Length: 298
View 1 (cartoon, rainbow, N blue to C red):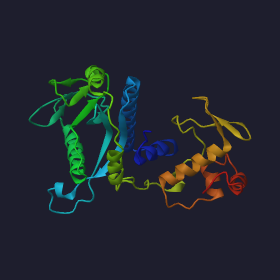
View 2 (view 1 turned 135 degrees about the horizontal axis):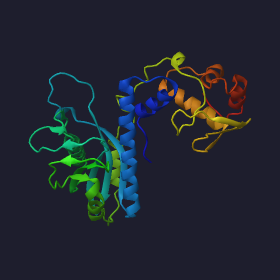
View 3 (view 1 turned 60 degrees about the vertical axis):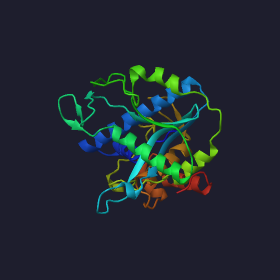
């Protein structure tokens, strides 16, 4: 199950309840594009129907010894979008859903079309290789490993791109995936246990949102649609007119609690605060009653 990052979810909530800055809007678009690209890749892999091991969104700490800086710079982490074992070989796939065209160069920085340099996307691929190779040495495991980057946006052009074995683009992705994603002959529970033992569940960069409760607009919104308020159908039921999804009052209240905890895990919640956050769509008496029945918790 692919999950959105904490920052992504926070920005989606704030986009419904505050006015985002230009920088925050840019970050939200970047997270949305990245998540969409990852889901597209998942769908393509699943559609092939091959029995493989597919692990998603694994975050690890980088070995401090690999950092050549002389002063402390805080924890370094690397996230691997996709770890796949297929044909008893190990693959990683970093997904990029860029909307813009770029120019590939082998011996210097990549560039936007127009001249501005960008960070070489293959740097992440190197980090994937290094962190997994170090773990396999520590656990005395042996795998043939290939680390790849996938430019998944169908309208993107990468100029001067050679037939690079570790770079997938939309036009060659299906053909190449069909070639490498072959059934496994063995199971790999020990390898998965190794990854889980080193997995960072909560990133050091996860933090509460920089917003006060008073800045948040009240109301109840569809969690899957932007800026779409839920309409009350009757006492215990709401509906989104955009996606036609129905929500019970309990589901709506659970969503409100989850949103506030996502924005700031230290906030003390109460029935009156939840009622205010709902735009008084739900009364504090109703919220207390559901809590007394153990239907919601805050």
